[in-house]
Image (cartoon, rainbow, N blue to C red; front, side, top):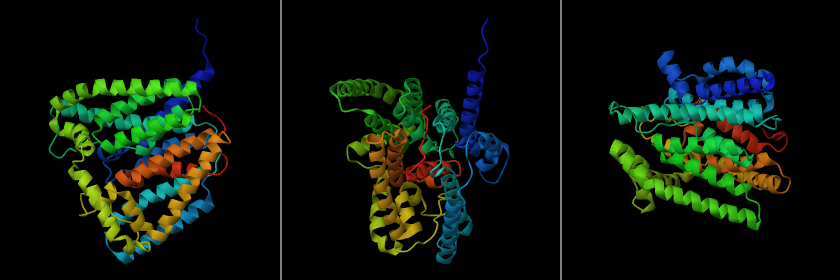
Length: 402
């Protein structure tokens, strides 16, 4: 007769709750629930989070740092006032953007310099978020295969980029082999179904940088790394033409988004989206001094406000517009110092979470040039606030590793 293991049972329940929270609250599923099931006028993942709040209150120290939150809230109010005075965008549009920053500040205020007893809390919530994104992508892909998409359906499914980076990097940096296999497999599935090249970029950056951080300088480890690179490259070269032909047969439009644009970029022939990102550099150059002082929040309602797509494609332009040159340069210097701090903490002091912070910095920097949802959507900005809080933390990093 099998003996009931109470500890394993409760651990399984906890993991399920964490995954469910990520799935329902911090993924695109939250928008579907808010808009289509509850028939709300806007996506409200915070309302779905309320039942989970009582669970987290018992498991984590989620008290808000009044000092950090007050400073952040004061800055948001000032930027809102500036936005109204500058009057470049509708009030409802800037209020929508400010909402994302509010949740970022709130999350930052909760996790800055806190002792987090176990990193698995973050991993499983992130896993749930990625699973929600994958479900949305698979449903889209199924409609694509069956040719049941409407003309208004997008050919790309956006999701939580920060959560994806955490799902990939945490198992690698904390050396959990089974979870590495699971997270990498999910990353590959998402890469083939979401139709977003920037998602592939974040997946690859997270994967490669995390593995590089785990390599120790020895002939044995270097040999293992070379073998792994050879096997991985061989696998990609074998699978690429197979997937290329398969997806081309399903949908030429989807194939072009995933394969065609990437091949164009490699060959130096820029697609329309890449041309827009290239032009945004010129825009940034010619408007640089206009952003000497903060100009408030921008609009990211690309379907309603003309010309706002540039802030989604090139978020660094949004940051310079919103905060001004001086604050942005301060942020750049602070990030450079944080890289130095976490490199020292990881390699000299042996603080494992600092490796995770280094990957998070790389993801944030990459997103600043290709994808702006990490500053906008209510289901993504709490993750942005979390990683920024841990990057900024100088004490009380994770005390245990799974």
